Length: 443
Image (cartoon, rainbow, N blue to C red; front, side, top):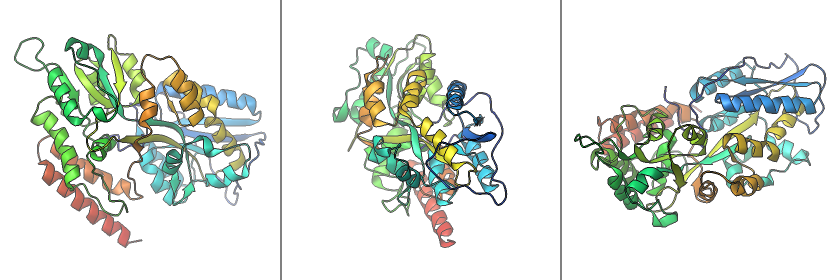
């Protein structure tokens, strides 16, 4: 199944690792009142729900061990779902519906608003205001806004992220091409011309075997292109789909033409996640859009020399503001302990460790602009940090799970040449708007 639409990606990885089962239950008639204390008692156990790869799972286990040493009598059990984001969120929704949810949970961004709308997440504003030892001002206003629903803070980003352009330095050097320029000076036209120069038949057999670029034609990977062209998925009121706009057609047509008209984008029979990433790691793709979450995988590709640059611009610079949201279950039996552990996960110390070990992009401004940006690395981290200045929040609605596949199905038909860009976007728009009207008429 397709891995879905990110907010900030949310950081979506190819997941593997060991899943640790279990969940917490609120006993009948027993409730908790959020507080600010860190008190713990014998036999208290809270559950952390994640959906990570093995390397991050191991770091989380180490962090839990350290936390438990600092809080005698309090245990944290890790429940890691390994089947991907869709499977993880489906499992989480089932647990929430059964009143057997984990105390602290990692949320896929596309599911945050639907869950917040159902009232199953704890109001963090109350906890923050009551706890003088915790201050959310270290998170930027745009990041906090991503984690609010109807003005209330229900989550915080443990990490943040942005899409940028990753490019193969070896191929650029061989073609004697300048590396992608920063800012508004590098446009879609520049991107196309560069892709054309990089696309080659290197062995003389009459078939292209080196490609200028490769495109992920799914989910949140489409957002930056829409925005760069002045388009959008939804109108400002978020009550109508506007994918049939001239701006949206321009964006999708540009990507479509890279494959079919200009023949500079490597073909793929699948629009599933990581097909393009795998192709890039094989060293025959010049440019690929992804984010810092893929750096660990890129480093495993022997001989691959890569660097990062801003995405090209058209009418404006734009990229997706991604987060990995963490929240507390409203029904937790141990609200004080859950809050204490939540604060630990959000601490500067933990964020710096995750950046060092796993290339996670910190959400705290003090860590992002300090240790993270200033560290000596094999790539230019400043590109990620600076992209946050023009990154945008994904357009999300409570009904997202009911309409996302309507859009993706049309994108798939466009990408495999079964529908024209205009027809596919028109059909997606009409289907989404009809579904939204039906759903909202029932509320």
